[in-house]
Length: 323
Image 1 (spheres, one colour):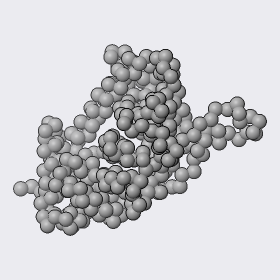
Image 2 (cartoon, rainbow, N blue to C red; image 1 turned 90 degrees about the vertical axis):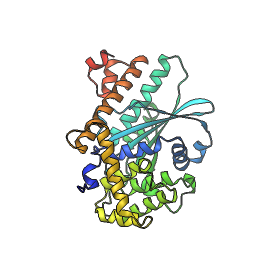
Image 3 (cartoon, one colour; image 1 turned 120 degrees about the vertical axis):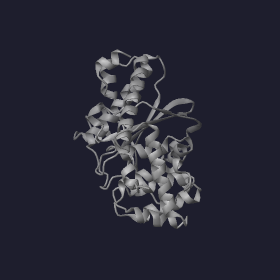
Image 4 (spheres, rainbow, N blue to C red; image 1 turned 120 degrees about the horizontal axis):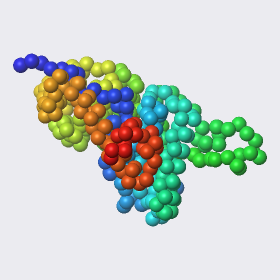
């Protein structure tokens, strides 16, 4: 039997690997509630009605900012009023440009309020939340007004808004009660916090230990994203993975074979002809294109302008007009 390293059959994930991982975790209802419970201020948290919680699958990031940010919108209610928690995900190792962050947030706020206005609805509540897990200290001002160097006499006439910030540097995996001890969420935060520490094997051990406590080490489909993320963000040898797994399973080598078989089978089921890695990349690109088409169709139904739809989705005007 030919030995296939799991390296050779893992997904080829794009530069937004951190975004893909984070969103795969946070789009679970329980994880989303536990995450917000841990990051939102108590004075906001107590106002939120978690009996109502949904996700907006539309991506609102403008093309010029796609290399800097990703986003997800968690929809809920405050005092029975529609509320959007706009989570802007900074997925680079360095902090973004301050103007870019505010401009992207402002773009979302304006787009949603304009939509409410056109539909003759009350303006929704919008709470911007920035999720950051970079290496450098966050130094971007928290208020839009702080970008201006003007006197106090001028400030009352200028636009102003602020955002909430969650920086994983503040995450303490020994104090997880505020996240309701959600081991899936906690493991993801460990991974994101240490994403740029490529030789940090201890974080891998913590993640695998948590997954073992949940009894998930034999359910590869459920821990797939964790495995991909570890292998893409850490400089770790296959033998090291086997040794860590063997701590919980005396057949660590067999576990790695199972992983290899899983990814190989997944690739074959999608008709990969020129290598699993290339095929998976093509599949991801096709999936993204189909999602962009669905998003564009929804926005057309909500009377977005063709130019705005093109800017948000990356589709051409001709593609949008055909929908």
